[in-house]
Image 1 (cartoon, one colour):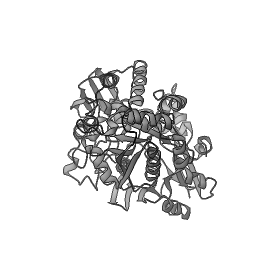
Image 2 (tube, helix red, strand yellow; image 1 turned 180 degrees about the vertical axis):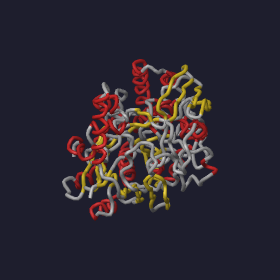
Image 3 (spheres, one colour; image 1 turned 60 degrees about the horizontal axis):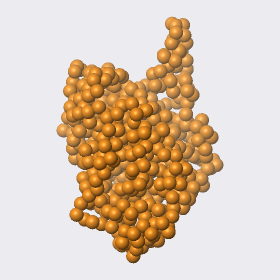
Image 4 (cartoon, helix red, strand yellow; image 1 turned 120 degrees about the vertical axis):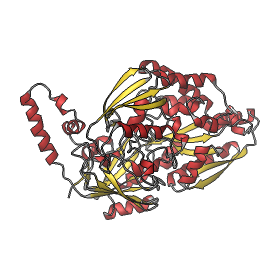
Length: 539
């Protein structure tokens, strides 16, 4: 199940990728005769990809809302990602590419102008113009219901947006912000919709975008149906006639449906992926992902909870047996993770540094820290857990057993995704088991540790002060040179992994199992299902 063995199943040739991304002309530039050959080759390549059919894909949580702006639950994006585009996009290697904007110019450190792609159509037939982008970015700046301002901790320092012309938009920043372009490429909350979208639809169950598929129906807790958008701006995709997303919380039920031919794909656990490896009816895909698990606390002024003491947090960190977690929950298919997950370029700490310095398992040292802090007898605590996903329950139960070694009596409060998200967004929790996803820029992994860059700080950590930490977060955001940023973020991670306001646990490899008829699917590092945009079906 290594990456190389499955890569040919899900990727087309490099040349075809170039055709799709609009780079072929540059790759073969040099003369009219050569350009003619490229065009002919392009036509032949496109003919080899069959069109038609509906892919049926399972997700394990209900999206709760398909709104494009500000909905915190990751499953919300699983439900809406096929109908919305942003100004930029990531390719399958998480490299930034043009999207609805063909180009952009940095006019000065606080001003960027984006030139829009002409002729792009929304699903309602309306042409994309600067007015739509202005409206959409304004919604991103202050997400309307059912969105949450909790997303603003990732939002770049945009203070204004205005049309320059029909196809040019000017974005004004309060300060230089290296995360601007990653925000749009990530497309978690940066979708572009038509002007006054929320006056036209119910954003919980409806949507209008420029994506390759248009929404036909959303039945909460059951399914979402998408149909091919024939006027999509990036031909020849989509190849599929449609996508139907089935909400199937139980993984074994999804696997049974896959084997019976009733599903074309689903994300599964490492253990189930291993069990299915070699099955003649399916293909197992494996990829690295940014979705690390994390234990979070609130450290609030005036509450004086035991974990407000750094020694208690350090003790909790020391009794978490990550090797045991990875083996029991991920069947050995995972890695240690800091606040920046492995695989995210040069930013994270190496595995050996995490294991030997920051996340070393040491029960005796933890017990001594608890004694030094005055809590040798332990204390009770409650942790919020999404109870509809088996992996969260498994991790929570193991954490419960680990912290018992230092006298902590941990109660697990299991709840549905919507209730969990409300507690997270409002800071009404003591402990919380979360899974993070990819961020558009390194700053997104750490923005919440500065009260000036994150509204969540005052919800979660207003009883904690660390000026050096705050400065590193703030200065890292406004430093555009990666070479200068790197040592800043390394130092910041050292502080975070020592102070342990949050405790990163581990990051799994991600496995997706697909039917033999579904081709060109890949496991996206972004934690989403973007491979379905370019997937196709063979008979």
